[in-house]
Image 1 (spheres, rainbow, N blue to C red):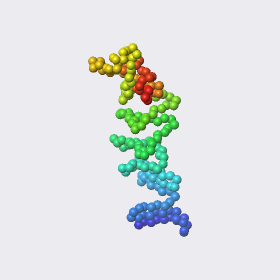
Image 2: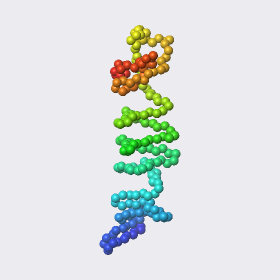
Image 3: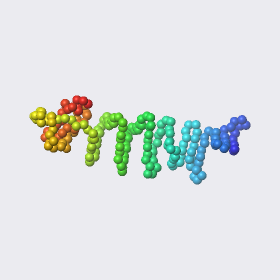
Image 4: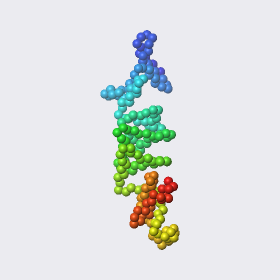
Amino acid sequence: MLTDSGRETQDETFTSLISGADAVEAQCKRFEVRASEGGKVLFSADEDEIIIGADRLKVTGTEGAVFGHSVETPHIRAEPSQDLKLESPTRSLVMEAPRGVQVNAAAGDLKATCRKELHLQSTEGEIFLDADTIRLGNLPVGSFSSSSSSSSSSSSPSSSAPRQTIYELCVCPNGKLYLSPAGAGSTCQSSSNICLWS
């Protein structure tokens, strides 16, 4: 065991370094670890803050880094060829920025999945979808009945009728989207069964 103490007076200890079999303990107003070349501060601690001055902080534990309160950093990056995961197992994950939040996937897909509702909201701007193809999967198909066609021919489709392959995208008054079989004119109806039951 190694013990070293500095004293201001005969009775007052102001630094203490104790090296034992299980731990190294230091008691002082400020503790610093410096690089052997250049004297750069790699680690410093006092009662107000801890500073890690290394170019890189690497946490190798399987649970990653756990923070009891907020985290402030200009950059979070995963190891090369590794995925980066931000997770809140029991609560929500919030990213806020007064000048906007930007998410880019330069060489891959961007996926957003959720169990309940997905809200895209712009209070003062617009929502702009820019892609070669925009697909809306699993939209319900509404029923269309023309007033000029006879009820017997429209209620029972014959096996020789061609399969419907072109649909019109319709919007209910409450904003719900549905498909309607395309015709010579619009087949969207505000009284569609989809709108009435939504």
